[in-house]
Length: 421
Image (tube, rainbow, N blue to C red):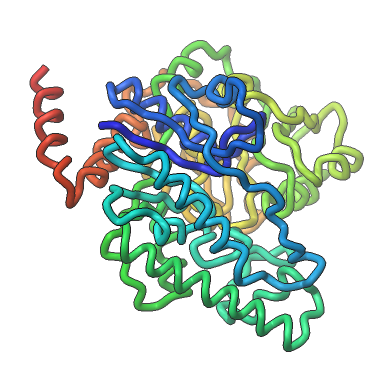
């Protein structure tokens, strides 16, 4: 197949989980013989974009996201026109570049883009976060998960003291956003990376037509991770690795506060990542036993995780489908995380019983961490297969690409030839 991946998160010197997912998926499809290109932003430079993000194919600069604020913070409202404007911009870019491709696959933050894609384009989108119905994409407010469904109350995320006018304007923005998203889901094929995300959307928009939607978890490049695990030294007793953006909702501050004075003497925390809370937390907790390593490239991050005693994912927000958890499991490391969002669904990918320890609170998470650190680190030969490997989940995605198009017979024929060979 000829596949055009699309994301406003690419290119970038430091890309997050969504961007990494797109590059992993695109590279794996290239390796399997498909023709894949990535369409992304043109306002982050145009030179060697593919090399910058580790993509082995062609990168097409196609649209800008300049000045995305629209003075929302100054005005204290979510602007009803802002997100549809950027959705149309990406839709137009897709229409301009889609010629000759069998499928266009969008990975981004504007679920209504499909409303602006020409109807003859075989269009698929993947929803990676709660941005299908939450304008902040996180459903996290005041240090806790937000379960409020009243559109006007969403104004509290943009203005602490919103009056009736600001609440009304924000309600218009939220209602329009959700209505447009529901229409896009009914019109085009959509992938949710966890069943949790699908349920969350139906909770906010009951009765939405999700008949064209599927749940396919995030995946990893297991051959690459298996090679890292095989090359790693013996796990260092007491070494704990945390990877992620050091920001509100990711739980670093709460974890460090809960762990203070409770960890055994041999414990050493390695925090990989950057973000707005890093300086404050490093000043308060940093030292010989708590090291802030800043942003690390992907190979360095994998190497740190592979030789750790265990990995911790302390996110307080409801992670949709944590790639960090999947990577820890694939590397054979024990992993401790909060039982929130889509994380409990990932227990099915454990390589051994008890590999993923789920906690209901941060105090319980620290207790489980201490219990694991009291035992020697587990070292086992890497498994030959991993359930969330791209190679195992890709056939489901390719079937979705071909669904209800003339590609289906071609896809089945190619798969039959591949298995016969």
